[in-house]
Length: 139
Ligand SMILES: [Zn+2]
Image 1 (cartoon, rainbow, N blue to C red):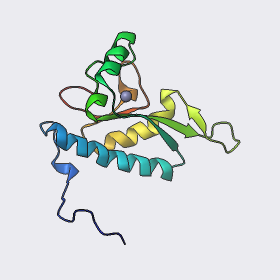
Image 2: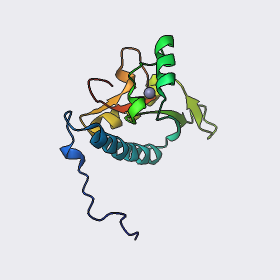
Image 3: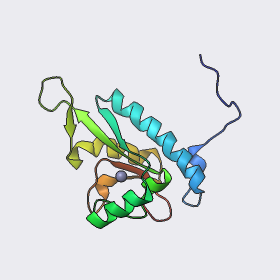
């Protein structure tokens, strides 16, 4: 049994709403991310972290090439891109998946974690490896 770091900390994801502060939503994001990672590994999915925090310069560059938006939630720690690996060739070696459909189950799990959770697979320009907590009308 480990000793809690802060026994008085009482983060409750159920109290987080669209009106909550960015700071509180950042805690919600990490709380949900932890659950997503545990669920993934329990369901035969391996993940690699690709991008969580993004610089304003990178967000602006992505916006110009259509790979992202300038006001990305990656700027404020409310989004992560992950690489998903599953064995699709039957050789017991996880294969990197690039198709949004491969992320569907992960995305649906993410969406049911909290009403503010958004999955990039639903975006007009599908972005299956993107998982975020919406803030200020941005996903
Ligand atoms: Zn992203």
